[in-house]
Length: 55
Image 1 (cartoon, rainbow, N blue to C red):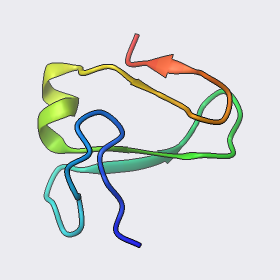
Image 2: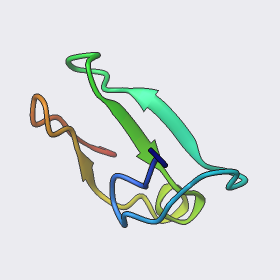
Image 3: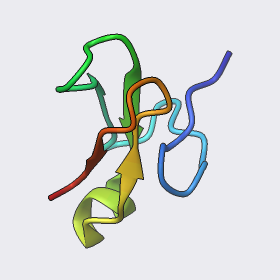
Image 4: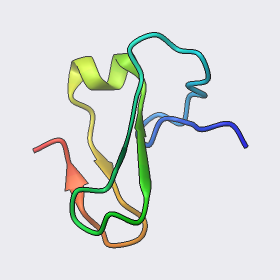
């Protein structure tokens, strides 16, 4: 399964500047961020625990 950005749903396979990390709250879900959404600080949330970011 190809990972997609948690904000815009764009596939991030081999995308320069993309990031994948575990939810800082529950540690269960991989959160995926494309370069563009990271740069504009687009909102995202964990579907497991409801944690939301980037702030």
